[in-house]
Image 1: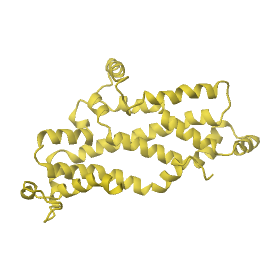
Image 2: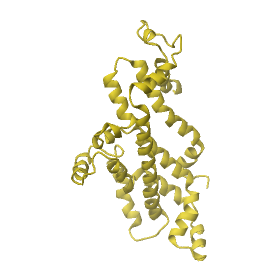
Image 3: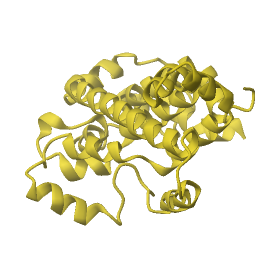
Image 4: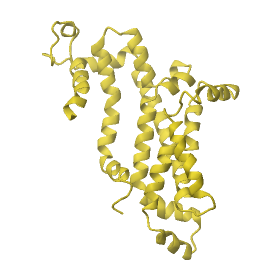
Length: 262
């Protein structure tokens, strides 16, 4: 099954390192005879790769920060603070997962949100895309809440006896213990923003603000027959996500298990 799912990546890498002549050969070769490493440099020069890369990193970092701040505070309120109707209100939050079919915009809220931001004059900026992350994501809230429920309540009670207020307990005690789950949220939010196509397509109108997902689409439109350069550019887009996951794999596995080892 792993080989089956890795086959598209294998074909992408093989095509990215084929020369123009070998790309047109029939029958196609399973692996390039002569590795054309210059395709990666040619791909970055064919369209504004570096500016689009900077825009994508900027958008992804803002999305990660917004997602961490909003979802952590909301999940803390649903898990560590007792207030009337807390568990009852959590059910509609979970039910809203069916609305968030695509991050950060979805077909249900796409038109009214665009109309709202257009009236506010915020279109053609990253503000609408980042602002939506400040209202929380139901899946991230559920993930963080379940993780926080595994943390013993005695830690918070002991801090309250020592005179700590709720903000100090949240930032100094719960926040460090929730780090694995926060890494998972940051990874999911960052990858979603990195791969997001619909959001930038709707709200970004200037090519100076385009992300790599939009850049690849326009590259395909202008240079559709140069599949080796298209695959080379795709490899460069996918590479940071793979490296990010491998770097934080330990936190990802620990966080996704919802703190069962605590």
